[in-house]
Image (cartoon, rainbow, N blue to C red):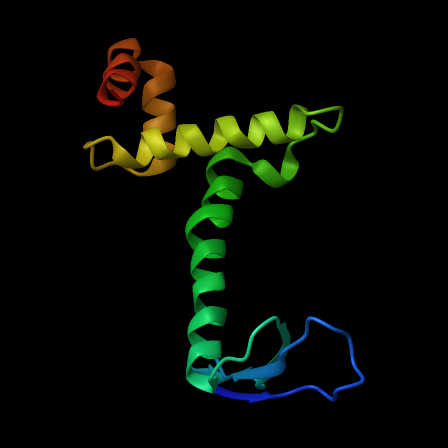
Length: 131
């Protein structure tokens, strides 16, 4: 990873304190992929090292929350579009994910969902675990 941060020109948009670029290189199946450059508009100046940390933290959230919600609950395929239904169902999915993650059973998230659907005692143990 490589990053640079530069202050913007004074005549540019107010509120932009710096412009940053992070260049990343990846290996996939033992082969190097072309580098990818991502640009960021920053509301406060950051060091290049801190910009890399912030960019990585964003992908940590993406991989630990959004990807899991899509895989376990098929969130991207959700068809709710009217009124507050999308926000309400997203909240319920996040609550369910928290219950599944904190349950001491060692199974996968999808496995716990299936097991709770098949076994009422397991479902009650999961719900009872969240006091």
